[in-house]
Length: 155
Image (tube, rainbow, N blue to C red; front, side, top):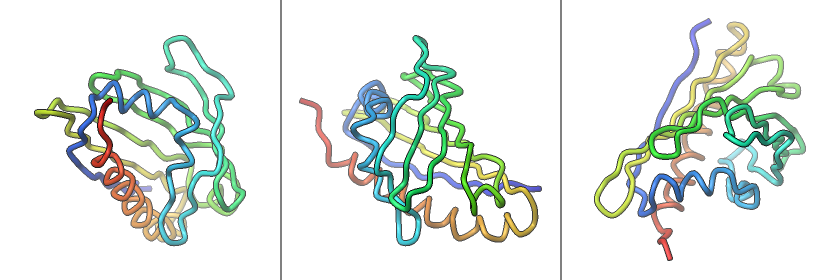
């Protein structure tokens, strides 16, 4: 089944390493508000945290009460971070096998050009159909979160 893909790009006035520090700061995860029917995050914590971060697993609880796991599958805080979303609960469990989120960083003047994308892997045709609106809302949520980063400043 063909996956659904999207990406958003923004200039952020932080270094790539500062952005990555935020990614692994579990206290910041509830800043993800979601979008429309897409829930935000109420809590996140490391189930497993490896010294090199690759293989670390983060348990995420959404504002709708659902939970999933995000595993760090690639960690290069100067260039790229990749997370695998898995362990979904119904109804998403019946629609998708997993999602892959990618953050790519390019130095840009006084900050970083950030490209954040997601690939959603449907289980079947119904899953692909239902992931369409979810993909749209996730893209809007990513855009909203990157706009927040645009107003951040290093101290």
